[in-house]
Length: 324
Image (cartoon, rainbow, N blue to C red; front, side, top):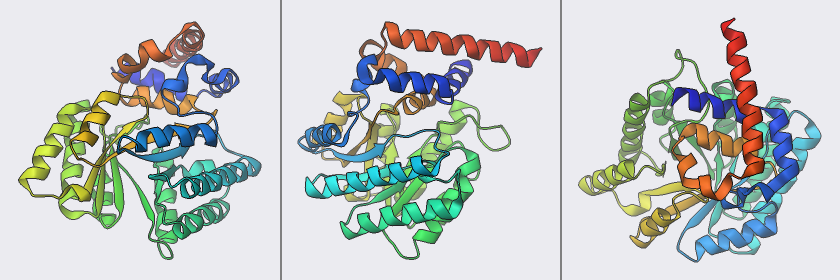
């Protein structure tokens, strides 16, 4: 499992493979896990979810943003998504990554971009979720949230269970709407749990804490055992359903998504769209390699396997060179 996880994380960070995937686009079969390449296609996908009583958090995909022009383009796209949510009366909000808006370029530049996004969303009463990335971006991302929260209350973020410091962060941000996840990046032992059982244990502990003490909890998991545990915990502690929701990724475990919505639970699907889908998808496989089984027949074809084959060769060569 560890080798598989490392492999998919490596693929997610490979710029050459990412560029190749963008050129081939959704011809590779990624339409089963990405809700279109443009806003019009995304809107139709969200409308279909809303028709089943499922809300959406929309992610305008983007990787490797190191130029201001790219960050500004991403900002304009997200502003257009916010307007589309408002104009189409969608049950949806925004998820975004600070790095896509310029965090790796200049902190103040990034804050200015995010402030414009949060301000427009606030005007339309739309929630903005700040996705958390690798450990190196953790502190500046929280700093941005602290800064923008002075003026806006439509902001929330993500707590990653594999980090040791997540116990502190979930207490610090308990008055925010939080999405609790396990974590999808490769982090060293001095910063994060490595064992799946330890991560799962901390994940459940964080969920329970925020359900009892927090504002609103988004439980992001495809694991039916954790979902059943949360249901039982919420019932035992008389936590009303309007205090939490379950979240899953677009295209994964569709039957379970519909089942939970029909049972009367708040359910939100994480809806990624755009041409820059490759890194996102590889991290999802790294986060939970079992996801591979859920989408294998839908996604993997000759062209996909070619990309993975190239990636596998580079990955193995890299590990051999490190050992030598």
